[in-house]
Image (cartoon, rainbow, N blue to C red; front, side, top):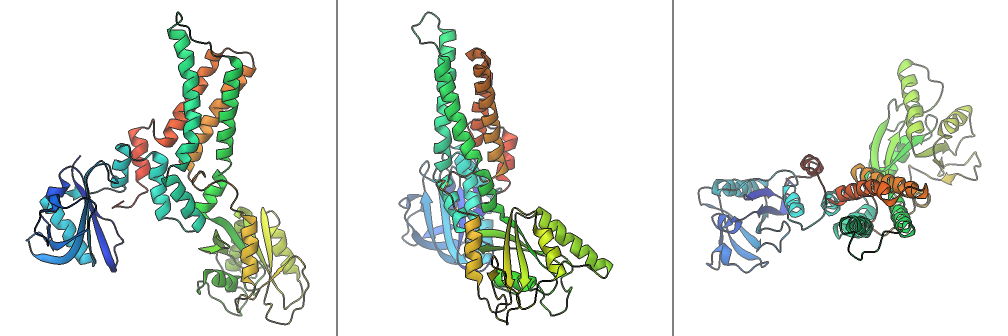
Length: 447
């Protein structure tokens, strides 16, 4: 493969910036833009040992004093010769280093091309490759733990025994058919049913993690609902930790939904601040109220906000009615720093303005979304993984039902093979080129 290069750190001022290079001949190429202070050529530097040197631009002028390291293949991230230049984090310096590498013969790496090469060179399976970008994009500790587990092969290790058991079934069946004169034991219906049932059970348990994986990556759709002036926008700002929504004493200030993400109780919430629910007086406010009701219908969690300093009103009842169909509702009794005029046993007392009571709210959110017992790394985190596992489980169910219905093992074998193909797609054992390209489009350049 040709030599690729890219800036692998963020395009902002920082203490350190890294330029990554990979491909056959990359050591000689890097030697044209980096001169070690010890006088040795870069290709002679000890592997995996940082060396200080001068970084040269296209004209051979020194633009930085930096460190460089080389990783001979196959013991590298991509499985081929790799090198990294650790420069001072000036975007100008990094761009000049990259341009010097291009002038020496490298080309710009595509999105995710370093990880794609690692996959194609057998250094990681597809679930591990996807875990790289999941780890980069993690917004919670749980998401980071799961991505790290997948990167270490946890998901593959759960899938491979299923694939291998099915492979043994198919292999034994074809061995009996192809070599009838050999003393090979026939595939027994009972053994086949036991294997299929165990494989199906494993995949169903895996599929049960998909919702949790989606919540990890995308967050829980959460609508903040209530009548005007109960402090919905103040609660949003308190949970975010900064003033995102305008807060005034004028009823109806929020006319449209405001959406932001926040980690509450270790759970990523997609918070939607809505217009106050009431019988609106003008067309614009009516539209805002209608959007508030639709947000409540689409939410998995509603934070129903009441004003504890005032008695319950008809508008509070309308807001509660709008929240009724959400899977989960937490009632927040806001303005607890003021004299209280209501008693709501199930409500959590909070002062969004003072920031008090938020710990109890975080605990309530955490209780609704428990971490569960699934080990990190064994949670399906995207639609592709879920769809492939679902097809495999459905094919196994079809094979099992065919056998239970009295059909012979050969009739069920086509379903077994379909399950194996789906599992192969999940890990990358069998993958089309167009699907590979689509998966790595999610990645950033330089990774």
